[in-house]
Image (cartoon, rainbow over all chains, first blue to last red; front, side):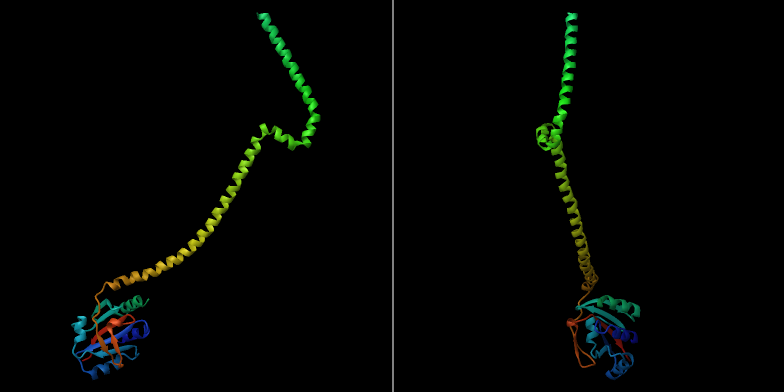
Length: 94
Length: 145
């Protein structure tokens, strides 16, 4: 998560980063977000009814989805490496 | 017959010699006239032109031909310059086509599945519509137990 937040800060204005949490309470999620997303560039929300996870077809976490113009262009099952994310961000923000 | 033939030959020879001598004498008289041609070379030239005309005209023809050749040689130079300009502009076009290459990179982008149309209520109080994202968006699905 810190890696994602660092990239979110680096690509602020070029790539939006939204963290969608589930299976937790709002308080716990907010506490974790304050610790992991200190840059302020990563925005987050709690998917209380898990409808967002279902809509994206995500059945577990962590999963990363990169979309451009409303179209999914990449998906990482599991934690994505910083280099892979950076390359993807660079490609879509060029 | 042989005697007659030999006489005729000798007569012919004599006539030839006289003719040559006459020509030689006439030529010696012409030196005076030859000075005239020196002065009036131009007028006499047309008269002689019958024989000498071809050379000048032939000479003029090459000159005329030379002129077009010069023009032709100038044209290539001009053509080369525009070509260079065109070549210079081509890179711009190539640059444009190079700009076209990023779309080629975006080509696979359009091949993915569409993101679900959702309105997300974010922590900062704003809403985010997935189908109206102004920029590329990275969604991270996570959990904090």
